[in-house]
Figure 1 (cartoon, rainbow, N blue to C red):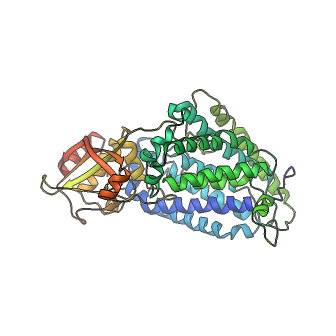
Figure 2 (cartoon, rainbow, N blue to C red):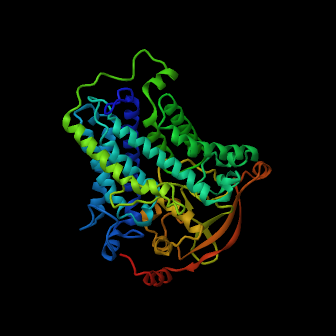
Figure 3 (tube, rainbow, N blue to C red):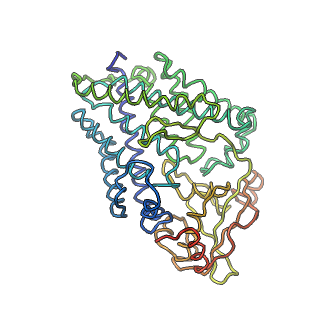
Length: 482
């Protein structure tokens, strides 16, 4: 890299721009499918009521008026623009085209996140916003990738990985004694189809997994800044460990977005050395417009200033995890699984017509039926399923969970579409209840004998049987909803 143009990093730019756009496409499609039922006019946490009680977390197109129609217009507009960027059409034009397209994605998705309340409180929301803003300044195919922005993407990868590594070392002894993965594959939020097999790896291999995690998150981030080919090798280690996480669980788009961001440190020459081809990856570029240079340097200066807060947080004894320090979601702190749950509990929701025979509602991603093999959903984000995991950990959820039960008693079709199976086929039950179960993976012997993936036992009752009248009264304690 020279001081501004990075001639040997065309593949990095293509992966960053198209990959980030692909994640935006998934995020907007997820919003169109889930937001109205969760947060819409008649959702579990209606945005109009939220805006009537408090101010949005930051800038949003919905600050003056929210409607489901406006939300869908935002989501489908974002999905269309993201699809064009995945196809590379704006990048084929002048540098201002991808600049405007990515800034539009950033603004549209920020409008959703800032009114998304607990359903949009995940660290990968702010990560996507920050990455999307930065991608706007990578230019088009007509100009060389700007080195200042690639360095800032490497800095983002450093914060993401090193922050996650430090929160683990500070947060839970099991990361320090290398036993974290004795539990994690079983107790993670949403296991995937291979998670059962990962859990049953020999314990020495689990310790090797933890060691690999520490190397990838505490050592490799520093080497991302090293000269080539060391930077590319460090990025390959980060990418490899993230792919391991992809196949061992469902963490929405966190792992995929980390992989994409890590490509900022991968040079074309390193890729050509591993995958030789007849042509160079680097095309011929035209001169970089003066205006584009000025815009990139201004954006880079802003991001450098905003980096002070997450940099200080990285080395703080009271490190914050997944925190945005400003209302624009730029210069954020990241991290995950600072503590590991040793036991798995699940909330099982059941309905009944007569109060005697109970039928279980099945969620799409979270464990329920012990005989159902866990499915792969990532990078798609099942927001209701994730909050059910937090609820089982003891998180406060009465503001959305009681409304959820109320919607089941009404047989509300948008809510039922969030589930994998409605045991009443669209009819309204008379009663619903929520029970707590302890879950553990079956052993190899139990799996062969019974075919079950999980062994579960009752552990308590979260919500006693409710009728529609009961849930309405409980709803009134919470202020009601429309």
